[in-house]
Length: 83
Image 1 (cartoon, one colour):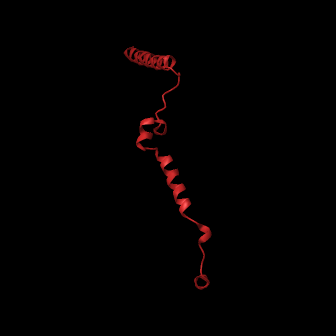
Image 2 (cartoon, rainbow, N blue to C red; image 1 turned 45 degrees about the horizontal axis):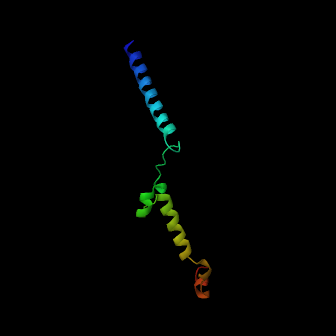
């Protein structure tokens, strides 16, 4: 019987927490969940901080611009030594 009281108490507390979070979202100005992603934070953007995926994409585009595969050519003597 004591176990049932603990379980019901836990369910009751969880219900209060869920209702509290729901009312916060309902009465908030836009009614949306807060966006906690690094990329949408204005302060971090102003400091130049980005998320790891964005930083990786930026670095990959820099590397692609530096590589110019059309200018790579092998000399005839070098190509014959591989055979």
